[in-house]
Image 1 (cartoon, rainbow, N blue to C red):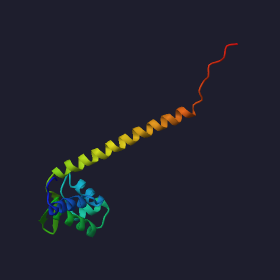
Image 2 (image 1 turned 180 degrees about the horizontal axis):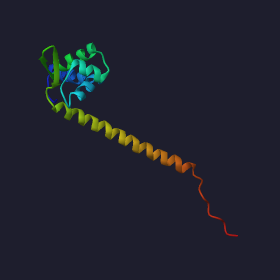
Image 3 (image 1 turned 60 degrees about the vertical axis):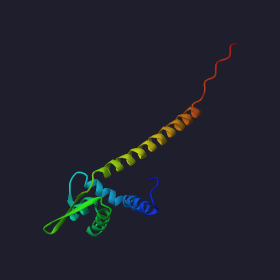
Image 4 (image 1 turned 45 degrees about the vertical axis):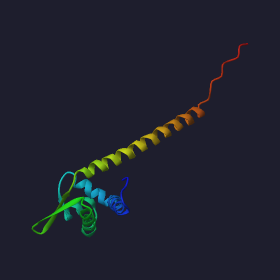
Length: 126
């Protein structure tokens, strides 16, 4: 992003804002394996058709999905599968963070357990 003008940074921010909505991520994830129409996506996500249509419109405006009309239905598919590389990279970073937090938590649990265990003292010789 080095050297990008403010207008370009605005576009980058819009790109990430589009991905900042969990419903849109769920839709993208469903489109990972197959194309779907709005009704199918609504059924699979549990969202209303109107809500799914609104999210698909935003995804299409940003170039994440392509729309193809077939008869009375519009089918959506991923425009560029590289979006999944970005999503997988982010998920990997989040997993690393949780792993590190779990390791720290385990260390504190071990300390707490050790502190509760009575220490044995050597018997004094008579």
